[in-house]
Image (cartoon, rainbow, N blue to C red):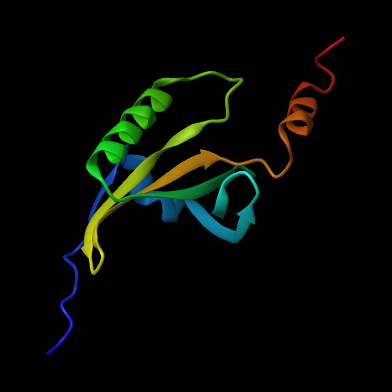
Length: 127
């Protein structure tokens, strides 16, 4: 008897630009960040801007729906003082251990801590 394979994963994006993410960004590295866990860092091909992709997995509908509502709210917040949340992609799939929903979150990435980043941005602007 052969093993049955899970169904093809359905992938959705919060915005169309993420569908072409790999055309605009190049993979830099993967690291274990103390704040986020394992993340991927990507650099925009035409600038120094970096984006991190972090993954969240959910195995039940209530947690998934609650997190989706949080993401929609966060996506609507635009403020120059917040780290930019670019959006998310979502994959639904059936596997051996049941149904799995995975979010890939696309977030502006800074290689230094917040205090250093604020100092860099405000250098020469504050008296």
